[in-house]
Image (cartoon, rainbow, N blue to C red; front, side, top):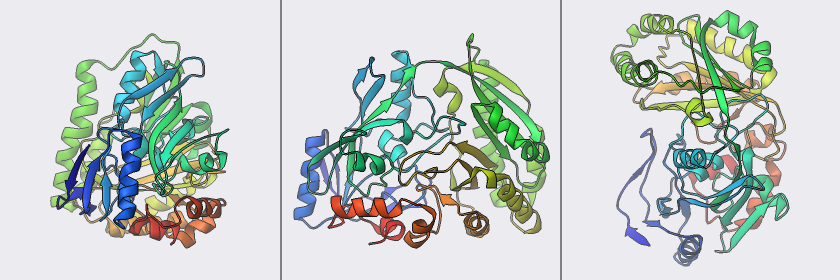
Length: 437
């Protein structure tokens, strides 16, 4: 096991969070990790595990012992009868997706990026969009975690069910996840249909678009009345991936290369943003393609940004989005990033943003290095008026007092934390704010 006495600085993907841990370790097994936790307790140090740093909050930051996931990777086993896969916590989602595809298997649903580790993605409640299928965390069938006393705890619906009910989205507050068992299914094909629509069309037809598609999402381009919609539905095939050139133009040049230049220009000269937005949102064309799930659900995101996302009761989302549009139109804000709208069915995880309610998400982004506070603060005011629940890994200003109001099972989570981590071995500033002391 590699250990380093740290003066090195840890930085997240967006570059908006830094930490200077006392030491960094890369355990290669759950047993080694348990050792690390016990030794940290002896030295009076806090412990945090990091993933790939894709959270925009300081959820993983620590000045104590930083656990890196690099050696805790790979598939432990596939159970073809139960249709489950067990993976080490540090496995990146893209490696899991590729490995499952080789085995003729797939997750049912996923978010739109796959750089994150499985533990990082699930611990913060990462989700895609779905009418019937929920977040990645809702697909968990079993968890293994090292708790504050250095013991290894396994949980599922049958074993330690109270821990299972909370730890699937545990924010790193209940212990360090070492392995996850996911439900999987035989690989299938999805047909994606991307199509520009006006803001008024999408918002007035949102109910039908949601009901008629297994996975519906759309993006609204601020300063315009234009949206791009995406419908993903299961398909009998045949596979028809995007052509190499057209796929490169859409996914690499438009979404990454050209977008990067547009954002840089917008950051340097904000006045250009509205006219660029009108041009670029009109340049979108409809396209349809069919492929295996991870190639349809996910896309590369190389343009760095800062993001805030709120989950609202699904019936509130159209009204809230119209409020955001009105806000942008009457303010001096200049926003180059599209606003993303997705959905999720209700689930039964204590701190899931969709816990106990049919949900829809509104995500706002700002290009890296652009001041985002004015925009995010104004949008957050709209979201909290609708009892919105912020994504745990994205920028927000809420605290434990607020969460106790919008999460019916908040006290259940904090009571479990009191039992599993009474000395707050896994605490940091972020958890102190969102969960209390």
